[in-house]
Length: 103
Image (cartoon, rainbow, N blue to C red):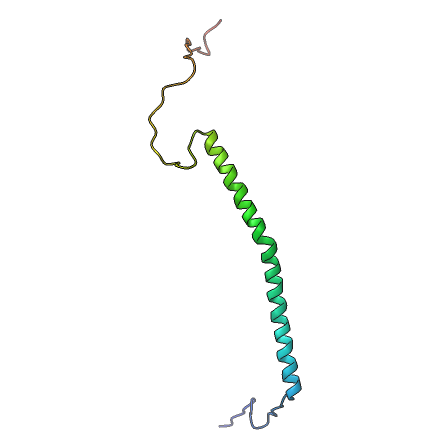
């Protein structure tokens, strides 16, 4: 049986990287890491105040709408006594009009 090894490690040449090149690769990786950190930090400095302002505006709108609906924003789940109807009582007369009925 014939065996052919296409990945013969004996014929492979191992190249050595010079020390200055390895330092250059490490310095480049460090610079890329610092740049990514700076971009993320600058986005955070821009987005965090926007998120805080948006949350404050949403809270203000929610409290305003709760007050308009008659709910106390400080204690929204309190049980209230049913109130009597406000305003005037409207008395009306209703009758059913059939389509076949002539006027």
